[in-house]
Length: 331
View (tube, one colour):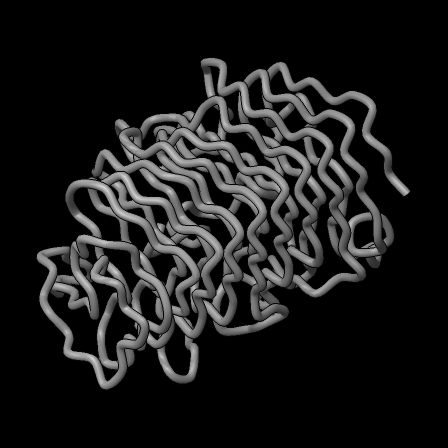
């Protein structure tokens, strides 16, 4: 079977590393408390842990690994300004938390580098976490803007602005990631600037990822609805990658991801995958996914140099199953 170029990108290269409520008008010169949440063999610290009232105002997490950490009960982050942590802005690990109308920025090392951490909002793999992520501004992150991973996670992500650094050579950033069995809707967001100039992989604006191809027993990510988003200057605008095995074969059962009424554009070639570059408005490896009524434009998907591989929609039957592609506008 002929593989798509996306199937040739190792999962480890694609998403390595991925993948307070007292009223807090200002948290400055903060202390950092261990959370019990371990990454890279380190018990990560947080500026604010399991707050009992709404988190609002400034949360200065400089010196901490996490800005705000939730592991129990319910919570709300609203009209907050969270910045300075090197691993995560907000972590929800087994709680029901809404994150709304907040600014989350400068999440990563100083300066940002290629270490595979630094995510604005993270609903954690292995947890039963849920919530609404809406109306936020997320920028200057190291690895990712919003990530929801794992079969116990359920989120609604809408009306956020997620802005990457790209094009950059030091890390492949991703804007919004739904992964490894998470349940999600992704609607009316603006996602831009996730672009990697290196040769080893690509960045994605909105990514749906799952299946045994990313590890034995890893669940597919099914039923995600990606609707009405504006996706600008990302290597792959919307990337659906549910893999059955490490060869890159697509899902053997229906994943039923819907990509509908999105506006996806890219002004030019910036990715350097394989030494030549790969970019796509929508790339699909799944089963019974729907790509319908999207508008895809720009030289970065339609008019790359002949040495590069650029397509508005990458959904060839040789690398995806039963895909439905209808009524898209390419200009």
